[in-house]
Length: 249
Image 1 (cartoon, rainbow, N blue to C red):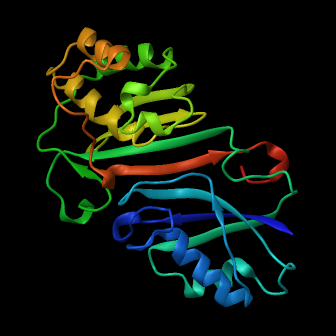
Image 2 (tube, rainbow, N blue to C red; image 1 turned 180 degrees about the horizontal axis):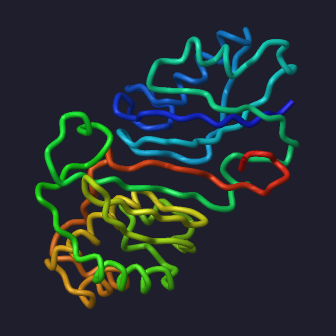
Image 3 (tube, rainbow, N blue to C red; image 1 turned 30 degrees about the vertical axis):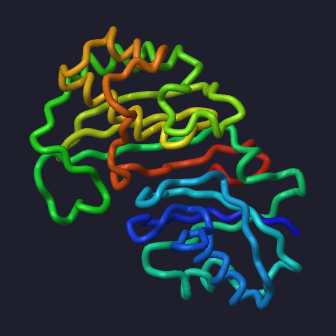
C-alpha cells in the first residue's frame, strides 16, 4: 500500500534532503528509522530536493508499506528520529499519487535578521544593518510574477528539461528582527529561491536599479558569477496537493 508522510526538519546538520554517498542527507535518516520500525527495507520518494542547510516546516514524501501498522506510526517514528527531524502526519494515498509530480504548488519562506543574534545563527540569515527599499522590491516582484523563464535565476539551468515556472506569490515584508520573503510557484529550479533573494537584496539596497535587475533575469547579464543567499534562512513551508489526498489540512 502507498502512504504519504509529512515531516519537518532543521537542515543545519545535513547535506540536504537527498540520500548521498559521502555525507548524511535527511532521506537516509528517515529511511533508516522507518526500516527499523517496520522491519522491512523502506525507500522513500520526496517532493523535491533541498540544499544543504535548508529547512522544511512541511515536507512530503511517499513510500510503500507491506501493510498498515497496528501502532501509531507517527508517534513511534518520532521516538527514534533525531531531535532535528519530526514526523507530523501519515495518510493512505492511491497508487497514482507521487510526492513530487502530484504537487500543485510549493511555498518557501526566506528569513533575514539584521542585528546579530546567536540564537538565530542557523535558522535565519544575518545581514548586518540591512535596510531594504520595500517599495522597489514590490515593483520588481510585481514584474517578476509575470515572467515565466527563470533560466538566469538558476544555478544549473542545463540540468533541467525546462526552465519555465509559474510564480503565484512573491512578497517581501518587514519583521521585528529584519525581513521575510514569501514565494510560491508550481515548481522551482535548482537554488532558484536563493538566487532570487540574493539578487533582490542587491536591488533593495540600491546596488542595482530595476532595469539592471530585469536585464539579469531576461538576459543573464551579470558582472559577476551567479551567487546565492545563505541556505540557513530558507524554509520549505508547504507543498499543496489536490484535496482528495488529505494532505492540505
